[in-house]
Image (cartoon, rainbow, N blue to C red):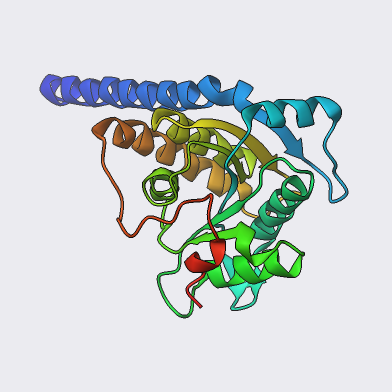
Length: 235
C-alpha cells in the first residue's frame, strides 16, 4: 500500500475513533446527569406509589404530568408503548401526583393523530376533560419540552415515557429551566427495542447540541396549565 494512502487510512481511523468516543461520552453524560431525577419506574400494570415516592413527587408540587407521544396502531388505538405511558400517567394523576395531564405528540396528518387517540384514552380512563391538556405540535421531544413552558406556562412537571427515552427528556427539560422528575413506564418488553436504543444515542447527541443553541419551537396562543384543558382539545 502506498505510504500516503496508509497514512490517510490511519488518519480516518483515528478520526472515526475520536468521533465515536465523543458520541459515547455525550451519551453517557446525558444519562448520568439525570439518573437521580427518575423518581420511579412503573414496571407492572397494578403499580401503585410507595410512601417515599409519593413524598418526593409531592415535594416537587408539579404543575402537570407530561406524556410524550409514541405512535398509534390506528385512529383509536395507542401503540403498546404509548398505552403504557398513558396508563402510568393516569395512575400518577389519580394518586394526586399532579392536578393536570399534558398530552403531547404528533398531530401532523388526519391519518396519524396521536393526540386524538391519547385524549380519548385518558378521558375514557376517568380523567376529567378540564384536567387534560393537548399539545398538537409536539412533533419531537425537544419541541414538546420547549412548548410546555412557552405555550402552557409550565414550570414544574413530571415527565412520563420509557426509561431509555426518559434520560433525554429530563435532560432537555432541566436545561430549559424546569423543575422536573421522571416516571419510567416500562410495564413490558417492547419489540424493536435494540434499534430504538441505537437511534436514541444519536438523538441524545443531537439534542445535547440543540438545547445549547437556544432554538425555539412552533409558537401559538398561550394556554396556561392552571386553566381549563378543554380549550386545547381542538374538537
